[in-house]
Amino acid sequence: MSTWHVYILHCGDGSLYTGISPDVEARLAAHRAGKGARYTRGRGPFELVYREPAGTQAEATRRERAIKRLTRDKKDMLIAGTLLK
Image (tube, rainbow, N blue to C red; front, side):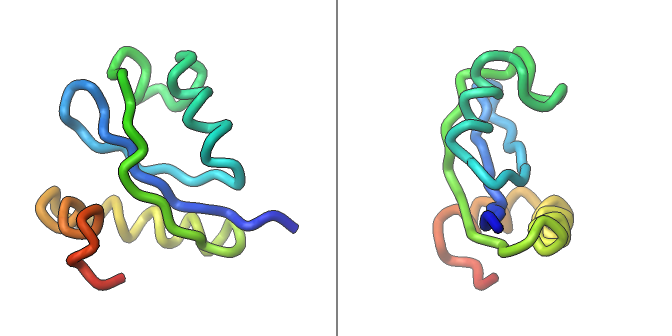
């Protein structure tokens, strides 16, 4: 069983994209190739700014939803390591 991760990308337009994947590097390559999520298409270049292990896909999905509900300021704090999980 592979470990899933939650990750945040900083997009070229200044926005943040949060996603999940068992292989973050492969998923980042897909985003860069225009094969990732619809939201990221045309928003490159991308920088991986945050990643955390989440165990199962279900746990990763729950954490992704929680992160997506955070304000931009709180997401920036999470990325900087100043916001507790």
